[in-house]
Structure formats: structure tokens, C-alpha cells
Length: 329
Ligand code: NDP
Image (cartoon, rainbow, N blue to C red; front, top):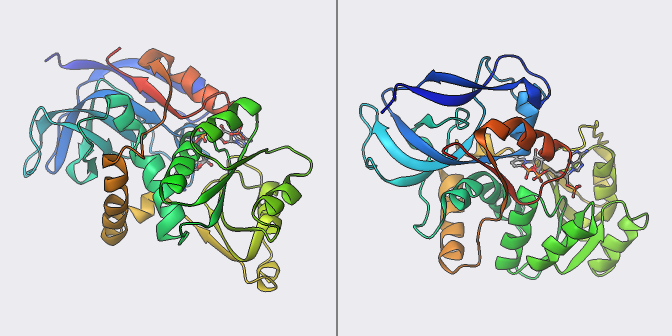
């Protein structure tokens, strides 16, 4: 194997153009790490925010973006067991995915079924585990209950619509265009409403039987968060997962009292430290994958050199499903 590889490097935060394709050393796995030949990298909104220095934690510069990836195990660091060279896996690695080879902690490997393509495997961990925790672990959603999914044609949105349906929940989907709403309907959304419809608050409440929605997955934030409070049913649960609008969301806790509302934050990164939550998600998702009711939704795919365009397309709301970058292309 050559000692050099192609990788994206970010030396200063900014717009996606700060991402540069470089020739760098192939990384060596340290104890407890595994090296993957990277076939596909799932790109999340958070990756784009990270490059912009706008995410929850600041990246340590310079760095190679790419938190979720799929590929073939290529080398094992000292002390790694239970995984073999040549095995196909997905991984949550924090960073480093946008390269021909990446090292990830062995603890970050995610088993994927043989039936998944590399792109499907890379589209799975972040969106489906987040959707599971939003709908079940934190959201306590029940079959037959209504759930509101924002940005429903996006990566997390498609996962949430599909998973909610598979769990027997009824879905109201919001998105910015008719084409995006059609994607949500194709995945089983029961009611779809344009997110800029002037009557959206009333329409959402009516769709859920007139008394509002018991469970809301909030990913837009900003001023839309105030609308979610109005869309919620009494005793409704709002899971605050993202602030894609990048506007300030304000909350007066007193407003929660009158209708006994609950607002819960969700960050997958910290939930992944909770072994019980990780096991619960794996247990909940495995049978749904096996039965074919959960199939990762792969969106547009790009070559490594086109990474800046992929990131910009996400920020410009041009993409649906999970954006995939294929470093071996
Ligand atoms: P998406 O593929 O869903 O892309 C983002 C979508 O957000 C856009 O397509 C757009 O959909 C919507 N959006 C609404 N307002 C804006 C805006 N002002 N600018 C850009 N997009 C906007 O990305 P992801 O699935 O990766 O993430 C979706 C959301 O979920 C993000 O807020 C992200 O941070 C969050 N998330 C959080 C996680 C966590 O652990 N807390 C894990 C995974 C995702 P439309 O055009 O239909 O409005």
C-alpha cells in the first residue's frame, strides 16, 4: 500500500471553500484503533457547521472532516479484538472520514448488515440513531401517536419519517418545497405541509386532531421554535435536536407551565457515551432493518475533490436524503 493518500484538510474555519484536497501520510492505527479503507462518508449538517466553526464544539485545527463512514477494515491497532481485516463496517469516528484511509476507535465501529451498500452503511449511524433516540429514548413515542418531523426530506428527516412509520406512529412532515414533501409522502408521511405555509400552525394542529401534536422533532430552531410550542398538544414533548436556521431560539420556561409542555435537548455525541442508550437503539433498530422497514436513504453522491460543493449544497438546502462522498472514486 502506498504511504500517501488523498484527504481533505481544513486549516482554518470558514465557508466550505476552506476545505482543500491534499496528499498526506496514510494514518497508522494506535492502540485501540482500527484503520479503514474508506468507501463512503455520510455528510451531516453538523459537518458543515463544524467547518464553519459554528458547531457545539470547536474543531481542533488542522483537521479532516467526516464523522461517519463506511469501508473495509485494513489494519488493526494493538489490543483490538473482535474485528478482522477485510470486514465491512460503518464507524462513528468524530473526524477523519474524508480521506482514502481513516483511523477510528474500535469502540466506534457500528455493525451493518451485509445487504447494505457502502453508501447505505455510511448513511445509517448518525441519522437513524438520532431518530431512534428522538422518537423513543427521549421522545417516548407510542404507536398510534402523532409526531411532527421538520426538514422531513433531509438526512435526519427521511430517517425520522421512515422510522416513525415503522414504529406505528402517524407523521406530519414539514419541508420547504413540494418536491421535498413528495419524498416524505413516498416514505409514508400521513400529512405534509409546506414549512412556509402561512396557515402552518393551525394546519399542523388540525392534522393532529385539533388539539396539537404530542411529539415534535425540532431541527430548525430560531423563530420556528416558538411556533413548535404553539403546534404542541398539552403535555406535548418537543425534542430540540438542531438549530438549522442558525437564528437564536428563545424560551421563557413560564410558557411551558400552562400546558405542561416538555422541551428536551438531544445530542447524539453525548448519548453515545451511555452504553444503555446505545444498546437500546441497536435493539430497537435491528429488527426493523432485518424486516426491510428501515432502509437508509442515500442522497446525492460526490467525489472527494467535490467535498466543498457537497457541503455548500447542504447549507443551501439543495440536498435530500444523506449526502455521500466516495473517496475511492
Ligand atoms: P439535512 O439533510 O436535514 O439538511 C438540513 C435541512 O434543514 C435542509 O435541507 C432544510 O430543509 C432545513 N433547513 C431549515 N432551515 C434552514 C436554513 N436556514 N438553512 C439550511 N437548512 C435549513 O441535515 P441533517 O439531517 O444532517 O441535519 C438536520 C438537522 O438535525 C440539523 O439541524 C442538524 O444539526 C440536526 N441533527 C442533530 C443531531 C444531534 O445529535 N443533535 C444529529 C443529526 C442531525 P428544508 O429545505 O426542507 O427546510
